[in-house]
Image (cartoon, rainbow over all chains, first blue to last red; front, top):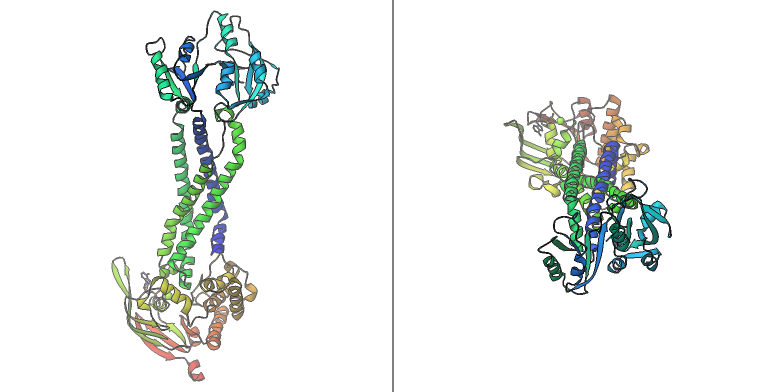
Length: 386
Length: 233
Ligand SMILES: Nc1ncnc2c1ncn2[C@@H]1O[C@H](COP(=O)(O)OP(=O)(O)O)[C@@H](O)[C@H]1O
Ligand SMILES: [Mg+2]
């Protein structure tokens, strides 16, 4: 029986290959697409629950007065506050872009135990006013080593004479959870603030206050208290848990999960129809064979199985190859995606979903021709092609 | 072996009812070789299919090999076919993707025989029809006559009591037809099978023991062939 299945499939090599090929492509794409979504969601979930992000209630791009820091610090339940400002400069030329943030160095490292220094040292970073921390992948890309001088050309925060900002590399970090990616550049708030004070722009504002709440403290009243503080201006604020903030960031990129689901559904439907088509053609060619086998004493049910098995063999071959290819390609894609999707990894859930879809397509694509084959009346099948 | 009483069969075609067999009565002895003759469209294939349990009668009794075929259906009827009848059709008997040996072994997959037993049985059947050296050829690589011989091997491999052949020589040249007929005669003689063979060709019919004439769904005379008379059957 199995031999019959395989022989019938290999009889039309090109057709079978095309069907298998389209299944490979489809399952590969589905795995990768879904992994993009799960990776985004994982970033959201990995966010530590005792961190809050305090930002302008108006928009991500409106800054807050520096003076808010002291007031936030005084709120019951707040342990530490770290100022964060997006620097938005570039290195060497405008194409080599990566994220840079001015942060309160020591609080930053306290609040983010997930950021681990693997070369250089915390002490060295804290002691050097123009010291900076960079992610491992970023350091590798530019072949930076500890002690290197790194000039950045500011786009937003320019000095009056337009000269570059100088930094010295004091630490290279890795992350244990994708709360930050490993292609980011951090430097001291003090250096940022003092340098800006010397310019005509003056004292800089703060993009975000990352607040660490006291261990065990309920975050809801803390968020409410912070929001209450600035209810009457000058800038109203909105506190969110870090997880929510990440989710908000994701939703800013558009409703990615929805699009992925829609595209995935479309791909699935197309591939399903292709498989149905292949199976209907196969069943039609085997009409007489089915008639003969029934005459020999094979039951309707075994003819149903014969066709279903063909469909399953076709789909499982293609589907598993596609999923396997996606797993093989994972490290390459993770590398290529870099900082956009830190922690790109195909989850077991995605793999299992792929397998389930493959089996589902196999069964469904085979069911109509298999049903027809089982219902086919022997005498009619034998009269065909006579 | 075969007992038919008031057998009727009609087909619906475009709202019209076409009565193919109309109250047919027929008796056939076990171990005898019958030729079924009649003009085209007279219902020969229809009768053969009914006797072989491929189709179901509208009315009448149909006892074949001790079973009332009007009363069984589905998987039970399929099993009955597997146990009691071997079919040889006019052409395209074989599954194209399987070799001659695999084709012959195919009905044995419905038996409890092991893989190696099935292979041995199939080889033996191929030897019986003189096709052992073509065991691994695909149907496409065989001539029409060779294909029919493989089909005959497949029909006897399960050792059924009855062999039903629908114009087995219809598509063959004279020499191949002769070989196929020789083979049927030999199987009948050596293995004691009951054979019912539909044919157009009077020469082919002469090789049987009795000729049954069918015309417009009615049974004509049954006559013994000179050969049978000479042999004293
Ligand atoms: N499945 C069917 N549907 C409609 N008509 C059929 C069917 N099978 C056979 N017939 C008709 O029944 C008649 C007898 O057919 P058949 O038994 O094949 O005759 P023979 O084999 O003697 O040539 C023919 O007119 C044929 O067209
Ligand atoms: Mg006919």
